[in-house]
Image (tube, rainbow, N blue to C red; front, top):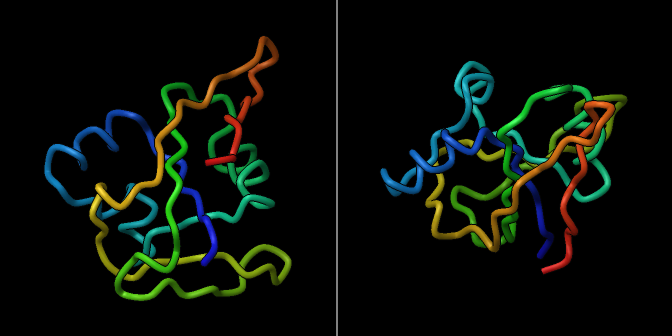
Length: 114
């Protein structure tokens, strides 16, 4: 078991909760899988793909509870990133926490502890 994280616009996550299914953000849909990050990757993911974006949430999942099984595939500099090739049930989230921006526009990630 590993905890993996999804950065998502809060509105999109709320819509998924209402629909009882999350198919992904526009980039996920374009790539054909839902992108996740490990605890060591989530900060760089936020900075690289969500710079200056407000209204985000960080959603934690136990990778062992997702189906189909999560695949760890090479991405940036060969690092293995978790990907899910299918929709997920939002009820499987361990927690959902807002991501703030500091006065310089950098993300302040929430505590990743359960």
